[in-house]
Image (tube, rainbow, N blue to C red):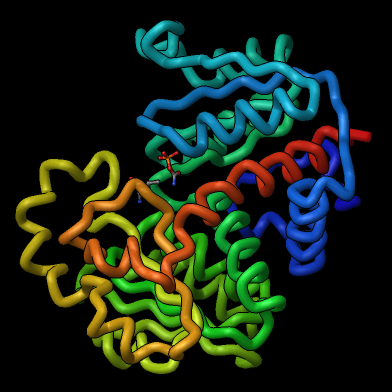
Length: 306
Ligand code: CP
Ligand code: NVA
């Protein structure tokens, strides 16, 4: 079993390529019930943004492992009244075994992790969404039997999901192409980190041209054009992002066997058409299910479940 005992997962590159592979293998063993693991631990969920999939999949994963979950909604804790992160972290550390945080600034997550001795998991920040990418890679592996050498094309906003996908593809030996409008590119530091991981063995391509990016791709991926916290910009972004919609026409440029992924929630008619998300190449429901298995593997590995 992947040994990540006591570790944080603040960004996807906290994992080595081998650790990532082992986690995906464990997730598959848990999904196919070749393996059952147990740990009697308590997970806290401190989410400052909305969540359906991440909240429910973490909760069910922990229950299935025999552990328990406390939903630490900021509105019913002192967090919303301005208690410093440093203090909240040191107190929660004394009660909980592990903490998953969804927040805005990556720096706030890192401050939490610095002050809490228990493992801290990034359940989405403005910079990264590593748990999502564990499920995405698991879904791709299920579809193609392998990851190395495949080409994933992400089309849309260079956001948290795009950033973690770039790292995930780099660690998995996949080619990654990201097509965004100018000014909406993924994080430069993360792109540099991914290039350092791949060392020219695979492609890390940024472009403004969605058709160039989609050509021959084995996976087409998109996410919302305005993330949580960017609602005020949403109307202005619509015309800028329109050429980046995953439509049947864009999908026709990809490999005929290509699959389509979306982390959800989706805005049909914006970043993806109804026909594509409901079409035969879409794997979004398997992808959503795999959040449960991938996060169960992550929790089990960090908590040393047996
Ligand atoms: N994909 C994802 O993280 O969904 P939620 O925002 O519903 O958790
Ligand atoms: N990029 C999106 C992902 C939601 C799961 C957001 O941050 O809102």
